[in-house]
Image 1 (cartoon, rainbow, N blue to C red):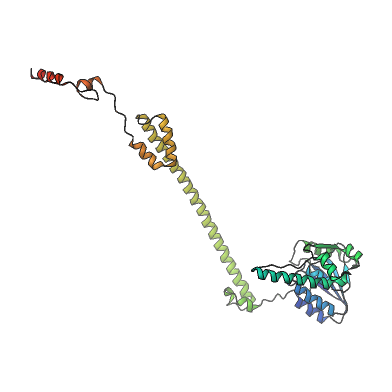
Image 2: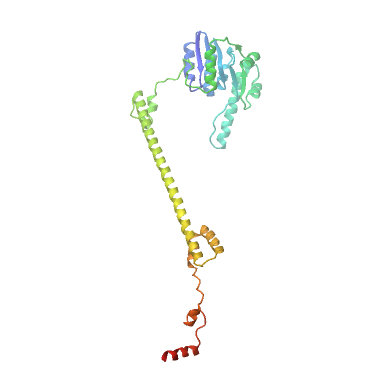
Length: 336
């Protein structure tokens, strides 16, 4: 009996071209198809399903998970076995939508059409009509069916417990999104040879003719990128230092300015040009309009000194001047 493992994402890790080619090569012998897949491209799954149906003797075994597009393959009508703890998951088709309202409507019609087709594909295996399948499983929700539930429904048979450790590891891989193949022994793997035509279409690799040259070029670019990142990191560090210095200078400048402003107010208070109440008013004015507030403060004249008796005798000061008679008497006294 020939065995094939459909482990991984359909359309990427497991492609219809590879699976169909393998089935054609082993079409004359019994085939056991083991599945552990979270799904993938629906049209890739339909192509695999069609190829499986074309084979005479195929048994499908769900080792861990057959979800979404993978469930469509597992429910194609061939004998199905499910290992203990394995699952099926059925849900509506989904897609990324971009475009105007007309394009979105067209995409919606396409998704509804795909759901109709998928319902028809699995209806016979589940024992329901296409309408019943669509109503039960294509309602926008994920429907998880345990192995025991599928067996009770008559959808599947119980698979013999073989390779328990590997099967549990496969469950772990699938549920945790593992794609490194650490526990996978899938003979159907994408071709690891580089497509030099596609690679050379990228400007950076246009002069590469071998895989080694591509790897060397990629390493060179990686080293350059790492150096650039280091340089950028160093520049960002220097920018942060300069910003800290500017902030410190700004704080020092503001402190010096505040001290200078306070000195102006203190001088005005000491000289008697403003009162304490006015000083508080000018402090507030300086906060809102420093330049004009300081100009106003500087324009206030110093108060005149009080008139003194000696100034009066000398005829100075703001008191009334000597009378004309007194002035004449002073002049006569001088002549003597």
